[in-house]
Every structure is written in structure tokens, then in C-alpha cells.
Image (cartoon, rainbow, N blue to C red; front, top):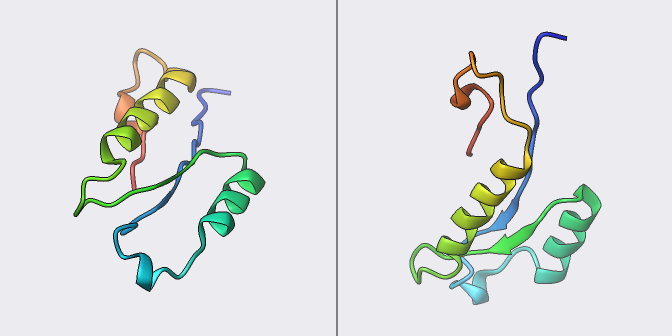
Length: 81
């Protein structure tokens, strides 16, 4: 094996400030995250709810993942969508 890419998922519900337009319940989001074995957060860029915490969680997850080879640039192993 020349190298490995580790996939880390963080399930994020966005636009939490629009509670009246919610399509996925909090419990459904939590259940899916539990099924996938990943963290779950709800955010709102508009109200700045949990945005800093989300980026902190992304960094935390990246620190837990194995580091790519020193010859490979980090960006080949990181994918933020």
C-alpha cells in the first residue's frame, strides 16, 4: 500500500435559525450521525450559531486522523464540502 486516505464525516444541519422551515428533526439528525458513527452539529451562518464550534470540530477530527506522508501535500487528504 503506497498511501491511505482517511475519510472523516461530520454531519451538519444548517440554517438552524429557520426552525419553522425545518425538514429534518434534531432527533433524525442525531440518529443518522449515530448510525454513521460521526459527530452531529446544527449551525446557522446567519446567526453565527455553532459556526466556530464546527470549525473547531473539523480541526479536532483532522488531528485525530492519521497524517499523510510527508511527501504528500495535506490537501490531498483533506476534503471540506
